[in-house]
Length: 605
Image (tube, rainbow, N blue to C red; front, side, top):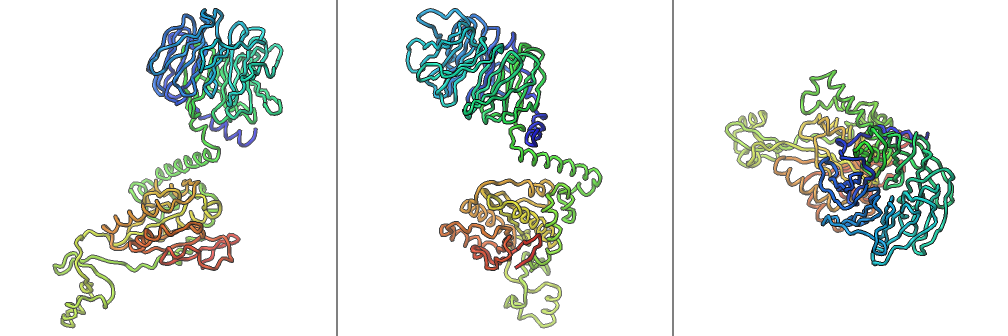
């Protein structure tokens, strides 16, 4: 088995039934999802069509009209009409809005032989039915003319299916053949024959490349329509009644008389999971339009819905989810071992590395992180202490501003001894009155670039730089926040909170920069902070080519406003040791430095 198949099997092993089985009064022969994925519809021996809202087990509605069992169901592409084929020899077209039906008859008398399969063309111009007399009947949805009769099969037809482009119709039946018909010419195009293998179900892959059919000999056959090559899927222990492709053509689902539902990887032909739970023959299977659910109908009088959401994650995403789960488990374990440390809402910054276990980090990040922790005194801001509020000698809300040149004129009139006393006790150097005594001293915002430009080593270096900056800046006092700047802007979060610090390595952004919207959101945030902080500092951790290929004329005003609200510094990441010239967008920032990585060594320019 390939590594990809192994991952797929691991994902499939976690498939679970969604909710309780949908109970019926009789054996269930067919099941399908509505095109919008809202409804699940089933047909059974009790002669009625049952409508269920997905996610519930309560019958939403039912439609009566057939006089014998309902064998097959098919929705029109727009979901407005449902076709049902029955053992009473009729096809009913149900209006899903009014729950009324139109009975299809041939030449003003009912077809007396059972109809086993029905299908709509993707373009909604035809629907077809397979009959027990070996004839495929093809109706036009735009005219009231009698059906075309496609003759060739020697006995019952159990299943029909249109190709995704609507040009071809496949039919399979009791004569051990699959016949492919040209819809436009109403003629037989090709015959696939397997003597002794009665065909119970046929299906085209949504990408139009493959045709699959199931057989009473327990096998499933997949034919490549381009070269005619075929593969055999073996695993069922009894005849296979129904098959269906996933919307992305990656997977095939099957149901059989061995009471099992099986999932197959189409490319490799490997069986990746057996879904067990039915107590009798499985007659019908279907995928939801989004591929997140599957349904199976059985003689045990139930329809089961299976949750495939995890299976639909791309392998790399699934591996990230598994890694994330391992991190969470490690954190929980650590919290059990050292409960006191984790009782507080916020962690001591010295313990930041512990809430992201080193073994869960990519080795590249671990190595960079170790180097950068030794360099952080060089990388961080100088602590200017900013503004500070005092309430001495009855003066409330007065702000200390720094040097002796900030003395108010009235303070120069103090006697020298009193002035010296006030300076030494930090009661001088007042500069106006502040209206809000509770105004905090400083907030530092770390902004990490994300998106298409941040890949591989550049992304790892950005992660490690961010971790190192968090460690250093958190020890300087004031409030610390972190955001991502990419295709979207993430609201600033406290990076020392356990849940938030984990998000640093879990962030995924596969789109380009959205400069205009993100700068606007940043400006709004800085304005809010101006009301609560005396000093705002911003550290950008970005690629050397940050916004270099964008016209920034329309951003000039916004950027100037941002500059007036905060002091911006940037760490530009470069993997080119010869790039000594300042980055083209360095003018966006008050100060900048370049972090250059070459041969796993980090230097600063």
